[in-house]
Image 1 (cartoon, rainbow, N blue to C red):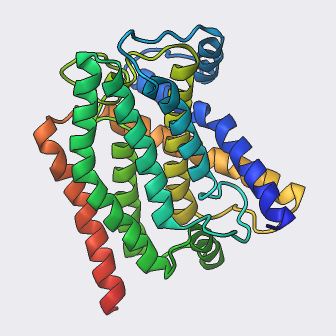
Image 2 (image 1 turned 60 degrees about the vertical axis):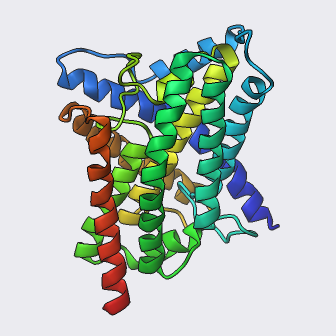
Length: 313
């Protein structure tokens, strides 16, 4: 393992942990603006996480070791996945780091432990949330696989590092492919982060909640880990979208100036995408559960079309 890759691991992990709460707060701020409210501070998620880390962790009397292990396992899986998605600097990958299939498996591991966590407390809300999460996953995961397969066909590689390096060298993709990929990745981002119209991350209504139902019994440090892991997952999917579709600004050389400039550019692109997500959520109503596959099929159709174009072009 080279010194550059070790530095990349430290830098990428630090950046994703530090900026992920900002994007969560910014989406909430935009949604508040569209509703005519001032909304929370863009640093509110940082304050909330700091408060939760100081609070006591309380477990249900029915909880087993799963409730103690699952938050740490979710955080470990997501942090490992963060090494697969370069945010500001693309270097030479090491071992299996960057493999898109392994990246998807890590996201599935985090989802598996989250579903177990919802079931372990023995509450009706947690069980209902876990059941809904697995139902949605059974439909969206084949679509996610096809979307990432389309990425592999377009960039002719399974490694995310090589994809981003190719995107930086090419500058941009062909316009039709660019539009289809952007729409597909945006739908995956909305679904995987449990946002409207799939789920409402701010509700506690038993008829609508999915993600919130699974973590409803969590408190203190465990809840902070779950909230931070969800924020990091959102940032990773945002980075895939903006760094592959709009690759300008990613550093390819190890220099303080290049990395600092890349960080500023990524923050700007991430803030713009957060504005888009917040506006999109505010303009949509939550879909009925049985209408969700129609949204997923849009990404499936576009990604399949990309594969056909790449095969027969």
